[in-house]
Structures are given as C-alpha cells and as structure tokens.
Amino acid sequence: MPDPKPWRYASGPAPGYICALCCNGLFLISMVLIDTHSHVFGDAFAGDMDLVFQRMQKAGVRAVLIPNVDLTTIPQVLQTVSAYSIARPMWGLHPCHVLAGWKEELEVIRKLFPQHPAVAVGEIGLDFHWSKEFAAEQEEAFEIQLAWALEMGLPVSLHTRQAMRRTLDMVLPYAQKGLKGVFHCFSGSEADAREIIGMGFCLGIGGTITFKKSENKDFLRKFPLENFVLETDAPYLAPVPYRGKRNEPAYLTEVVFALAGIFGTSAEVISKTTSQTANNLFNLGLRLD
View (tube, rainbow, N blue to C red):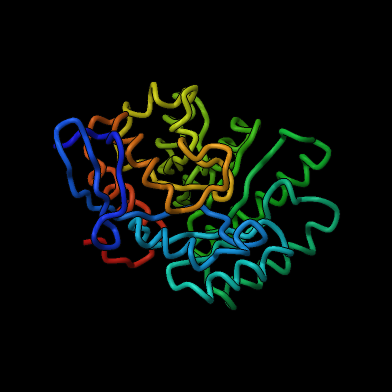
C-alpha cells in the first residue's frame, strides 16, 4: 500500500484516477467521490462553472449535493442541477436566514419537494454564533423541517454553530423514529461525535480536517469509517494547500488524503467507503464500481 498522504499528485489518465508520488514509488490511485454538501452556484462560480464541473469529474466526483439557503438561492440551485447531471438538490431554510417572514418562506420551500425532488432536507439547523435574536424562530423552523424529512422519508443535512447541545436534543426524538442525516461540517468534540453516531447520523468531513490546528484529528480514528461522508462546503473552507482561496469539489482529494493519514489506510478505501455511505444515505442509486 502506498503512503496514505502522497508528496505530490496530478490528474491521472482517466476521470477518477490520480497519479500520486509517494516515498515508495509512483502509484495510480482510483477515486470514487461524493461531495455531500457544496454551494456550487452564484457569483463565486459565475465565470467558470463548466470548468469547475470538468475538474470535479476528472477528480472522480460522481455526485455533488447542493443545498439552497433561502428563497433567493432556489433559482441558482435549479439552474445548476438542470445544467449538470451529477448535481442533486437539497431544499431547506438555513438557520441564519430564519428572519421576519420565515413562515412564508417555508411555505414556498415545502412546495419544491414534489415539483423538484430532492435528496435531502437541508441545509437546516441552529446557528447562535452571530445573534440569538431569532433563536426561538430558528428552533420552530428547525422542528418543522425535521418533521418534513421524517414525513417524506428523506435524510437531513444539519448545520449547527454554537448550538450543538440544543441541536442534539432536538434531533434525538426524530432519530428515534428513524430519521437519518449528516452533521454537516462537523467540528464538535469526541463526545458529540459519539452521540451523533449513536443516533445513527453521519459526520460530514471537509477541508478543515487538513488544517494544522484541527482538533478532530485526535479522535476521528476511534470511530468506524462507515460513519463519515465527505464534503467541501464550497466555495468556503478550502483545504490546505488551497486555504484562503475559493473551494470547489475537485479539492475533495485533499480531504481524502488527510483522512487516509488519520486512519492509516489507503486513499481508495477512504473514497470508496465514504462514497458508499453517502450513496446509501441519500439514496443516490449510483454504481460505484
């Protein structure tokens, strides 16, 4: 098995293959990737969207899951998923956009599901980082959307920031009824991870795992790899060596190599295991061989 983290790598001879130079030679690595959370729409990608999708497919990305955040981003998501077959939508109201008029927004979003079928309800949750002015409204909107997911048999893509305890408490009754999903951009503690996995939910791992000060590196290996899915949260949170630049799904390879180093296994095992988990969770129906 080659070093899990190569010294350098480049695109391989066909989509989904990476040429990696490691201490024990040059290897051709097969990548099968699913980006379970990416905002690939809007101004950040307006100038080179075709190239972004070409790069992600060359890197081995088989599907990219795209959530809206409010009403204004719905047309942008629809435009992306109609133009690129590997893009799949998620519908929800992001907690930071739960403001005056949120009930009317939810009414519009709920009607999207039969019109434009989604793979999940998301991005939903709680965010008390910037303000708690609408905390009660966030919780009410979250509860409504959790109920939607259970009713429709869909997983959820969860956002939580400075609200982990309350998020866990609100999700638990729904998890006990069979709700599944992902704690997107997981940055919690080992105890949080254990509780999330115990509820049958997955941890979404992205570019922050490549950061030098990432605390997750110390405990993620304690959990089975089947409990993780990959994400970019593009255009945000680009991994090293792209940190500070626009993120994009092709950069999932950096997350794969980081996890391979943490788990002491190959990049192929990381990519295939996490993609199989995502394929099953979101009912994508992809052939991953």
